[in-house]
Length: 545
Ligand code: N01
Image (cartoon, rainbow, N blue to C red; front, side):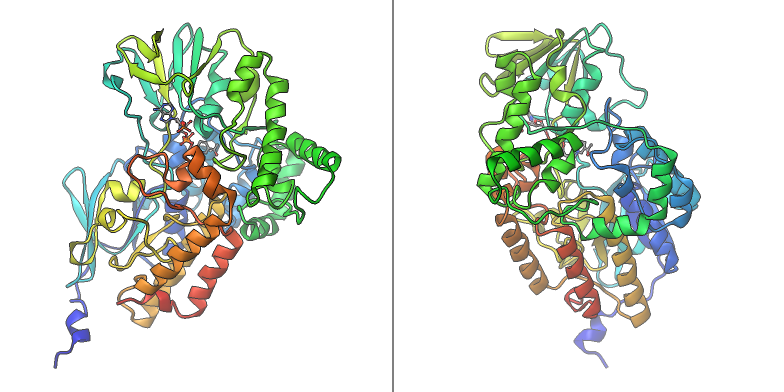
């Protein structure tokens, strides 16, 4: 007998793997470990030639975490926690890379990771319920489950400035920095881009360059910090309390282990407000955004009070008043862009060899063979650095061809806007999961990465043990989630300020992308509760087929 459901039950075909994960960074390592725990035969592939994902690719001078070490790591392996030692409060990129390689070795992951393997296409076939993954070298393999761990900020973008190809000097993107580094001494260096990447580069290379031209379009609110060594006692205490640290970070809206204050910036006297701002400015980095008041991300007036405090700091640090004014953001307020942490950023502009060029007032007209042309002035350069960011959140997923049921390509499905259930699963793409897919929380990322990998492994385990052949977001769940992402985003200043500032989390840094929240602003703790609810309800919103 045939009926519609037996028509759709797959032929039994042996696949090369049970699960294939794309990306060998934080996500890929966590996924491989947890998929092994449920007995999956898994393979991780990565286009790059090293383990570490974003921490392998982003090898530029000054790269380090903006999160403190104690919540910028995994909690699931006691061995790793006990045996790994962090040396700095904000670890340098090389140390995070070493950590991830340590994780790969200690958990014996390396044997199931294939590097230098770039995916070009992944195609689902309904008859067999199998994904075929094709690589750049012409080879292919088959898998039942396909999981993206490709990262949220991994698809670099170069600006479309006329003449960019003509430049005869050395040209680098921060996210594609040469492995062996670049010698800058005695050279005239230009930098375009002052997000978190450019802001880390500035003070690091300023002492190396002969002359350093910093081309600024939109200034940022940078919160400076100090960076202390982690001593043995601090490391021992973190090891002892790791579960509590991770649990607090998981419950915090932004995935950090910080005090969640319950006071508005508008509830206190101006003197008290100033005292709190000053004290959290001195703690530095994310402490300022997270621990002063509870409404710097939700109330425009409060955000503007924080903005004014930082403008005052900029004017104090930067000795040239003209440069200070150029560095002060005035067109948008605090939290309108992702707030970067500074390590001597503003003070770098006091150096004689650092020249700030305001390309908002006078835009870059072209890049020439010799350098950068701004109005009638041509800045001659030996090296030009692009810290111009990424096609964030969706970029890696739409760059390759992910082809679901009936030939539907993910890129086309999302052309008018992101559709998914919880940023994990997409209707039309059975047995395809995303670690940190678009619309997962705006957060310190190792926390949602670990929890997401564990959730995906449990979901697959559930399907395998219940004889469910396909997990796939229902259309209704996509409607619900899109509305919730929009609602949560609009409740923050990130919406209005991010649109004004052209923030990547609104997709505004990439021409042609729909302006929408690419991340969930409702908080990590709330998001994790939605994920637990889905699980406790028998994954009903993931049973479309
Ligand atoms: O990229 P960005 P990023 N002419 O998109 C400028 C994470 N991250 O690589 O604002 C002139 O923020 C552009 O100017 P404007 C973190 O989440 C984390 O720095 O569009 N300028 C902007 O200044 C971060 O938010 C860490 O006017 C041009 C810059 O390029 C995210 O990655 C470290 C231009 C791009 O800034 C992205 O950061 C690094 C043009 N034609 C990154 N085109 C840590 O946690 C673009 N720009 C440590």
